[in-house]
Length: 105
Image (cartoon, rainbow, N blue to C red; front, side, top):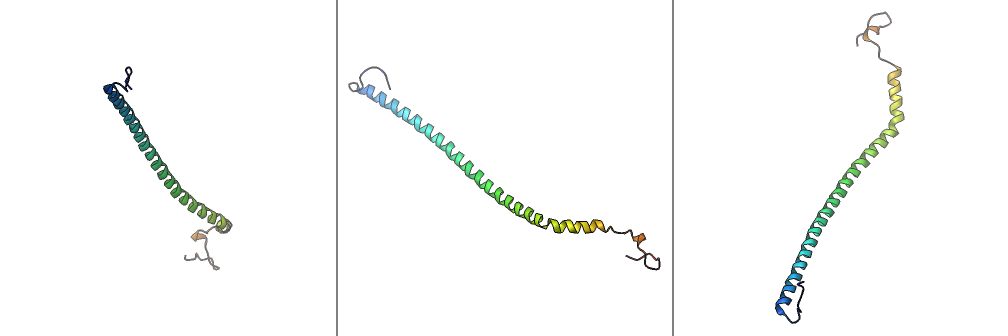
C-alpha cells in the first residue's frame, strides 16, 4: 500500500493502493501456483515410486516363493547330491568285466 494521504479522500491514492494490492495478490498467486506445481510433481514422483515399489514387491514375493520351494526340496536335493558324491564315477579304463576285459561305454 502507498503510505501517506487518505485513500478515502484521494481517488488517485486509492487506485495506487488497489494496484499495489493486486500486485501483491498476483505475487501470492504465482507463489501458490509454483508451489502447487512442485507439489503436483512431488505427488507424481511419490505415486511413481509407489508403483515401482509395488512392482519390486511382486518380484520379491515371486523370488521368496521360489526360495521357499527350493527350501522345501532341500532334503531331496541334498540326498541326491549325497548319492552322486558317495558313488563316484569310475574311469573307463577301470571298468572291467568278469573276465578282466575293459568294458565299452
